[in-house]
Length: 77
Image (cartoon, rainbow, N blue to C red; front, side):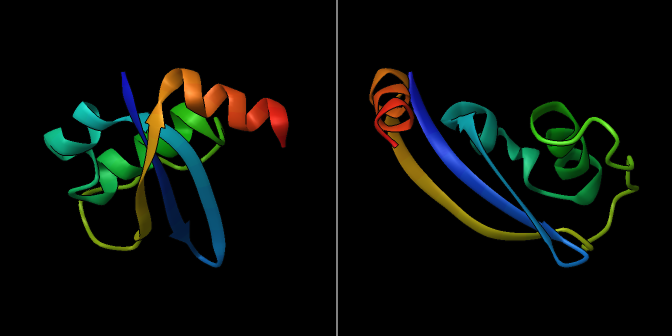
């Protein structure tokens, strides 16, 4: 399964996580309601659930390779 490394920014704080490419492509980065849910699920369970809007900035979406390659990179780091 291919992964994407996603970095989002909200009020001066950056949140980086790996997400399934297909999920990203299905529009989960389209508005703040979805982006805030991604942050809650992957980085910060206390992050507020935001309404639709554009307060969360997409900093980057990078191809992280396959899940196996990503796990090796984390273990090596």
